[in-house]
Length: 572
Image 1 (cartoon, rainbow, N blue to C red):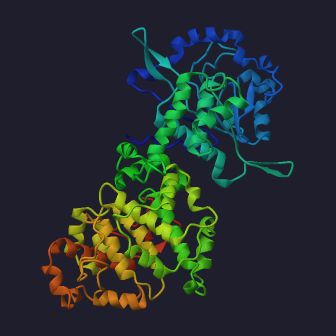
Image 2 (spheres, rainbow, N blue to C red):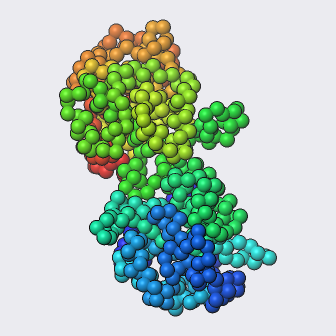
Image 3 (cartoon, rainbow, N blue to C red):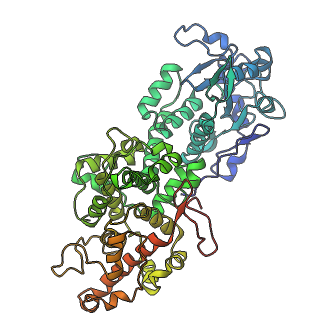
């Protein structure tokens, strides 16, 4: 599935037009059938363009004089299409500004319903000139859509539903307009007004209701049924057809696919059959879907790092900064200043306990009920599961991160990446990472950020070995290969022993120290020694990256040093 074009840039001086054709033939205007459509509406006496016909319902009064309109939420106005006459007669531009409406979304195609009501303008093809709005500082977006359907053997335009990618773009731009990057729109009578938007098609019922429902689903404000019920309760007759209603439910399924990061059934107690429908995820597929779903600044920051990894990294760092060992370091105060959103979302956690949790993690163990509950919530986009009170424990955060690693359909480090690591000295970690796939580099670096905030004395060597195993093809084997009895973590090498004693700032000894250690000869002589030696080399490499790549910036995954001359960060 190819990613959609970027949402049109917000501008005060130009219109933004997005069409949704499905073939070259679809580039033609639907005006050819406009006359037929107008017959159903009443033509020049169109019932949808006469607001006086919609004043008899006291429970649903018109929101704006002159328009058949209703507020669906506090920030979204659903309305008939305005016309040049109505704009001037009722002062609609000034009315929109007073209400704090900062953007208008036109879901029509040019020359559509040209015989209805006041008709269309000859230049714009719409019932008004979009420049009327933009000149007043109101953003204008034309998200008109239609697709071709076959009726009686002939292709006809169908304006009832768009395709999923198009609906996603529309929802993203609506969300951006309503958030306005956290800014208020106008100050009225001394009070700040949050951004509002107006959405219209022709009548402001079918396509308008569908577009608003897609926004509510995208922002996790309602489920499909709840969204439809809400819109119809505020504006009766909305989402007019069964096809539009089905689309809302199908769009929710589409969003779930884009947000799924844990390949598990979407239930806490799955039956054996439930696992048959689970599609295994890879890092590439997760990031492809994430690049479709996210937008704006969040997309820029997380272009090359899965959101789940970035979120868990932030919380695991915060748990360490809240530990007694860091109480007087000032690190917590600096973190809170840079990350106000997550500053209160984690309880204090012992860095030693975090390392031990990673070291003792078994890839064959079933996730706990609490862990499964969090996985299901994250797959559904309910990130508040990580932001609830009481804050999630450090052990839960570790389990979520490591289960994500082992549930990937392909290991995070491919066989080729491992060969690159084994062939180059661990001290040349930056050189190695320049030869590893960009997405893998930023994801691994993001995970390793957890260890960069650990104080001296944290047993990171054993934890990094376990992490190396989980990132490689033998991630399903929980036993430590260097242990005499075949179980438990490997003993630290001389340089790792120094790291255990004094933290990641300890000067690393040359890699040749491994071969000189008492265990060096037995390492190469054991069964499956090549694979296990690779795991040990990868753990050394991870240790070198922890020591050698410092972070900066809000995304926390951008190294100070450039990699092969490319200094961009996780945002790509």
